Image 1 (cartoon, rainbow, N blue to C red):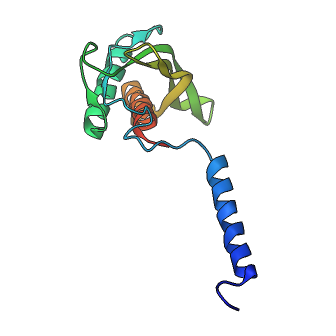
Image 2: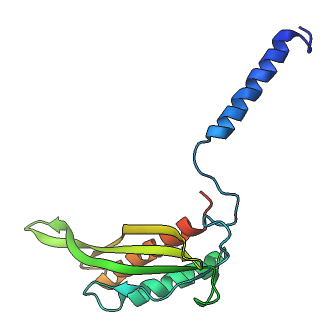
Image 3: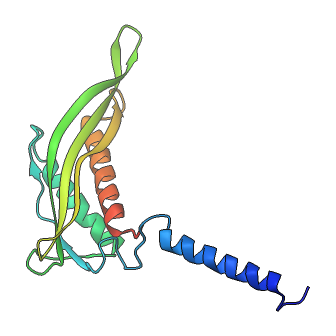
Length: 170
């Protein structure tokens, strides 16, 4: 078969058309920017509000978020007036529930659930991310662990998830 035959030309044009159609429809939204927020290079993280009855976890979450952003190094952490965007959040609820039991209905493990909501907003007021009902959790064994360890695990998961979603392109 010759390279300039009508069959080869038709095949090349068909494949080209399919590639263009696939590119036009896509498989999702992709960004080629350095962050999923497109153009945001710095972020401010004011202290989260705390609507729960668990004292101090908002401070712990805010500190962990700042540390994660610094460690990730995709976005520069800056003061609110200097940042391209602000991440504002609130702890909506805190629960500690029995998770597993031993014989005789004795609690063996507890699960700590922390539910938050957060918004990432540009300087110009445009909302880039608006999430609610975001759950972080940790489990501890009553004989070998503590509620504070489970809180830290839940806070770590929340901070990791927020930073990952904020800084990853897809």
